[in-house]
Image 1 (spheres, helix red, strand yellow):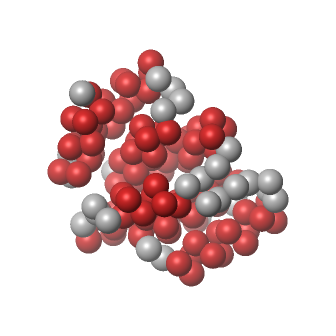
Image 2: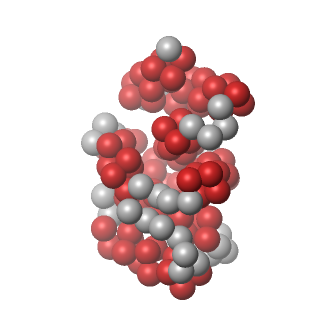
Length: 136
């Protein structure tokens, strides 16, 4: 029930309310893939790029795979304003040192924004940083 409410907040653009609920749920269920992806998106939409990086790290740690199809499901629900917020977060992350996590965040944000050129650049960088990472 709580996850459904958080998802409603996310879709309705009430990102801080969604984050609050996702964080409470994850305090008790830290390995929920859908919650981590939702939290990552909500963080990015509020400009909380550090937290986006942490959520990405948890996804990679717990699941060892990034699923682009999951990200595409979020993209289909985002407004133009939300996509601009994602781009702002991506630009912030781009100014940081390129580590596996920052490149993963850039990849995820580019996938959410539908920027296939940036997705391909990130995939190339990831292969050079960590050839064992799995993106499907």
